[in-house]
Amino acid sequence: MTIIPSEFPNKLKDFVVLLLFLSLFGLSACSTPGTTRFKDFSEAGTGYTNTMTILLDEAGPLVIDTDSIALRKSHPNLPTSALRQETVKEHNQLLKERLSILKDLRQHTLLLKSYFEALAALATDDSRKDISKSTATTVQNLGQLHAGIEPKLTKAAPLTGAATEIIVGHFQSSFLEQELKSHAKTINEELVLQKRAVKAVMDEMQTDLQAQISQAESRDVVLPYINDRVLPPNWEERRREVLMSTNAIVSGDKAAEAVEKLRLAFIALVEGEKATVDISIFLQDLAKMLVSSETLKQPIESKSKAGVAE
Amino acid sequence: MTPGEIRSETLKQLRQTLLIMLSPEWDVALQGKSKKLVTQASVELLRVQRARLQLANAELSEIRDDLIANEADLEKARDRLVTALDGLQRTKNVVNAVSAFVDVVTKVVAIV
Image (tube, rainbow over all chains, first blue to last red; front, top):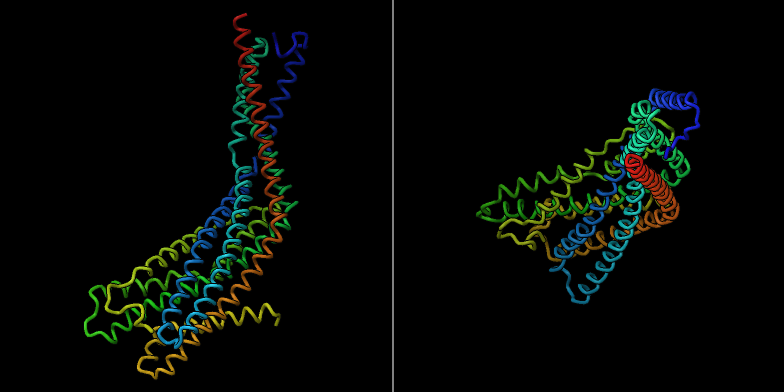
């Protein structure tokens, strides 16, 4: 049993093998799979959506805490229970509305994340390498089936693997280019909207975090210093924590800049240009900010209770 | 100025006002002041906070609606990528099947 028919002229067999070699060398010399740039972009996009999801999770508790500070400060000064009831009801309603919007934004971010993940999966080399490995094995086995052609095919086997990788790589690359072009408008619009969304969310978070830092400064640092004869034992430590937290705040404009970088990288990809996008510093800054917001939740062991800053 | 710009500018002012009213300087300034003034300050703080929540909710819900309007197209783009990925996976499966078949044939030929 043979795969290549025995009646196949030997010269023609040699010619086929030669063509195979030429095509392999030709492909290897003139092109490389261009999927790396898609991979870089999709990884940056996935990093962004992961961070955005965390931010949206944190934005809710942060706005509730700030609102609670405002309610607590005002509570002793609201003269009637009817007024207090109306106040807490109205604030709760507004916060519930906020939480519902944040939930919808989170849901949408997960959809965008799944787009970037699909792009990343298609742009990775794994499938291409698997296919080329299998193809190389097949060619080697084919060589063993036909003694006459075996030496040439054995030499060709690793190259066949490389060729398959390149061919599949080209398929991936050209498909990705075609895909990005056909949905360029959608993705561009999405990134423009994301820029607006991240700015709006971060502007709110910046305000909430700044408000909490200010109140921590007032409650744990300034008022004890003014009013207390003896300062709390860890006053210095708390003062350092609170003042250092101010540096960790990331502005909405900075967040919007990172998304703009992502959008510009996308436009470069669509236009077939090299797209470099590095938003890692921005992502690190956000992580620091979230850690900082956690620090603020640990109040000082002080005679000053939360209500003192009223 | 467009209505959106007016809202955005007002929201910015409200945020700044809220931060002033929650600052240590504000707390220090209110110390020792009349009950009437402190009560008035509390009521104003709550009004500013409510207005800020309302306007920010309006801004965020507008963005949310625009994003949702883009969802159908985004899903389509994602699905096309997933379909292409499936195609690549099928190619891999076919090549693997051929490879396995040829492997068996090679062993059979060796015995024959």
